[in-house]
Length: 170
Image (cartoon, rainbow, N blue to C red):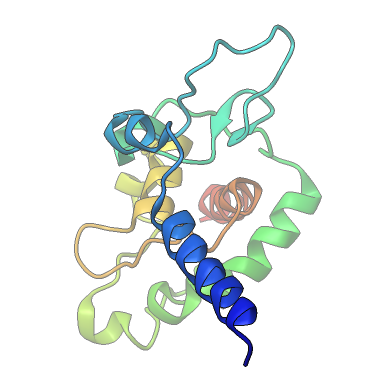
């Protein structure tokens, strides 16, 4: 290898090491920034719906279960929501909660051992749709896992619509 090629190669290596060690001047601001999810540094332009919001009413990201308590089900009494909710309930909820449409009620396989609640009980009928949304999203008090990562907001409401239809008939 000629002397000039060695110099160019060494120069490229040094330049590569120096360049990769450099940071852009705004990195320290981004590292020390204490913004929460959904916040921006700039003001929002008029007429823009922020990412993470469904129809401007329901945030996709909830900070805590109680934040959903006042939500109102936009899918309430819609036949297509009840049909979709039945399918989702059978996939995700029936194994523990059992078949709510069956009379007399029998808990699911897991419910026989862990006491998954009968969602036809009056205390669950008295809960708000938003409260049930929060429970689906964040999970139950003991065993129920959170489904917020797995179900979309519309799917949450579909399950609740199905549940309310079943509760009304029992």
